[in-house]
Image (cartoon, rainbow, N blue to C red):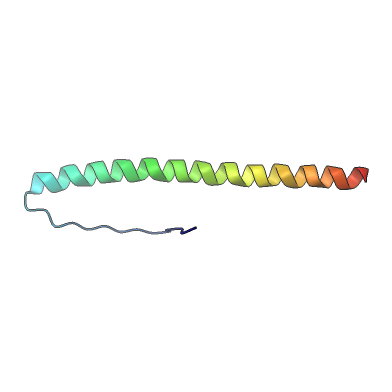
Length: 62
């Protein structure tokens, strides 16, 4: 698995308005991706925590 912690993208676009439109769209989509990635990481940590509690319960009853 590859994790990107910081990504900086720069584009040289001829028309100023195209650059602004691209920047807004890129920022919007990257923010949505970041939210999804953060939520997936949170769910993964919660699942791991839940599994560790279950394993702990099994050891208590063994």
